[in-house]
Length: 627
Image 1 (tube, rainbow, N blue to C red):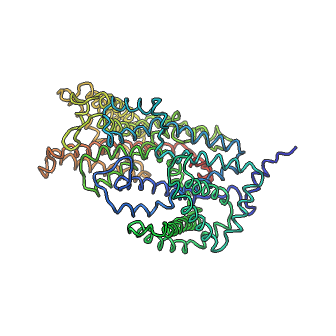
Image 2: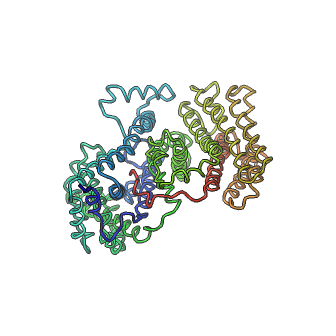
Image 3: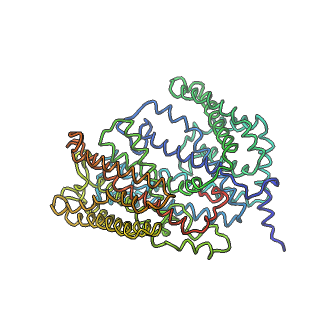
């Protein structure tokens, strides 16, 4: 008996469009929406709404500012996530889709709830409830959160509620897909109904209706069992994306009405802001406010989808593939990084613009650094929503493709250690600061985190010791990489020796914590300032690394400037007892972080040299995107 599955799977496909057609626009839209989500969370730090932690600076106008993205951002994400799930159905059975979805979403959810979210909750409790800090305070908090009484109140998931909803909505979509012809009929109905201006009118009417009929009663709770307005909004958006992704007439209609939608949004946004600002904005039972909200909500979504479909469908490339893979780990990490950053930076009382830029930079760079580490460790990739390394869409000739990747694999592993070392060092310092109540970043040196006055010096000393060992291993990787790329044996040896000495200085300094005079063996680590010049020397024969060479030259100049400033060789008094700690932080960040960037760049170069041809990429990363 012939297998009916292909007919079921293909029945929903527009005959004029092949299932393999790429939709890079959906990838770009998802990446942009998650980027806006992170900026939105940074904005909440300065808002007047209740959030996990706030800056010392708060602004009333944030009530109106968040309306720029608040009405439509998550709805758009649910719509695109539904479309991504639909792409998966073209190549899998319902059981395979459900199993893949479970494997990509549930481990990160459990890991996040047990590891990432408790850090946020602990910092929030210290900030709002006076919970004690330090290692003992954190351990006590974990005991409180996961005790019988704590679990009786539920396991907090914070920003991971989105993953819970995506998982449940995916199950609903798969169950509906299993009903023969149901999704096809739904797509046909939408395609016939949403023609011409009805593409704008009918969805706006629906959004207005649920805003008036459900929102006043249920609000937005982000709690699955009691969030009916959100389900009427987000589940419908998810199923909408699932049903229309291959309906080309609807996408062409969005392209046609994209300018009209953008004009509607441009008119609705300032009106909506005035309604929030003015006390009379809730007049007439809030119906006018709901009308404007619904117009803005759908108009922006149509404009984004229309412009994306028009201009981004074929805009793929390495950058898109990288960002698509990074999005889920980025999302998992960003809020924990942000909350910790606010807690650490806030005591410095920085001016609001400088603090804001610092939080944005730390959140993005920190989250990206997490991705760079976890993607290289096969054992933890599933915990961060990444596919196992052995689950790639290889062609049939696996052996021929994998053979070039085995070349230089030891060097690349050592360089991978170089990427991870700065991230470990920064994480250890952040944890040590959290465990040192009253630590003053402006006046105290980092070495004091491992000294006699610290409550838990083992955090700093143990972490720096490991980071020193990793730096030495990374240096060997640098030397071997230079030799592999240029044949410069002497340069490779010198580079390796400098890094090994620097790593030895870092590790040895932790054996004699400050203020022991022997702690100054850490000065050996300063030799790493010469490493950028040595790498430039070793790579001088290569003409295909211009950006890396510029980066190394700039880093060397920056470190030289910081050296002369901190040694008071120029502008005496610029660095003083009141701010020496911040200068040391800047110096340490530059001194350490450039190693990870250079290691990553050399790793990429070794990979390209080792590969005879570039590895094939999926036709669209949206096909397997977990969110």
